[in-house]
Structure formats: C-alpha cells, structure tokens
Image (cartoon, rainbow, N blue to C red; front, side):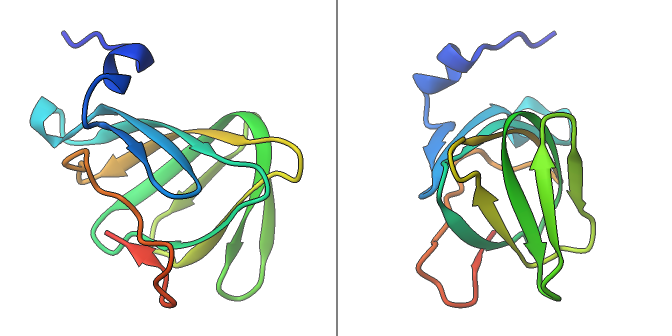
Length: 128
C-alpha cells in the first residue's frame, strides 16, 4: 500500500514548478503501478501550449476554473467536476481562470518518471 500526502511530495524532486503552475507527482513510474497521479495547479491568467507525445493524460477538475483549447480553435471551459482527456496526444492550449487557479487531478499513462518539466518558450509547444 502507498500512502502519500502533498506535503510529503513537496520535500522531494517530485514537486515540480512547471512554468505556469505546480505539479505534485503523487505516484510515478518507480511506484510500479503503471500510471502517474498528479495534483496540478494551473495559475490564473496563464496560457500554456502543451502536447504529451509519449503519454495519454486525463485531467479532472477539483477546484477553480480555466479552459482547454484544441488546435481547431474549439474552447472548452473547465470547472469543478469536469474532465478532459488528451486521448490522441492532442496539442492544446491550457489556460488558468481569469481570477482563479485551475486545480486538477492529472493521470498519465504510461507513468512519468516524476521530474519532467515543461519548456514553455518552445514555439511548437512544450512536450514530454
């Protein structure tokens, strides 16, 4: 059994400042369960162009607000209780809310090693 808290993770390299927010990598590849679970904060008033070329990701909103935009220009507001899934390695824009951070539980498959960090200055979008 694995029991771990946000505070536990903050004392490790698995607490990542990814540029426009933070990620507590609560479970990683070395835990051996086949997926990663993160507590992700997307700061208010930020925009990130992202793509996960090596992972599928599901994000469940537990607080705050924001939006995700696909590369066809479709914008999807994200609020508490909403989920979005990047099931085709989708390149996308992720935005924090105008006044509120977007707080997500993010699941990655295959699992992350836990120290990955976005490179938000890449014109093609950050990926890992």
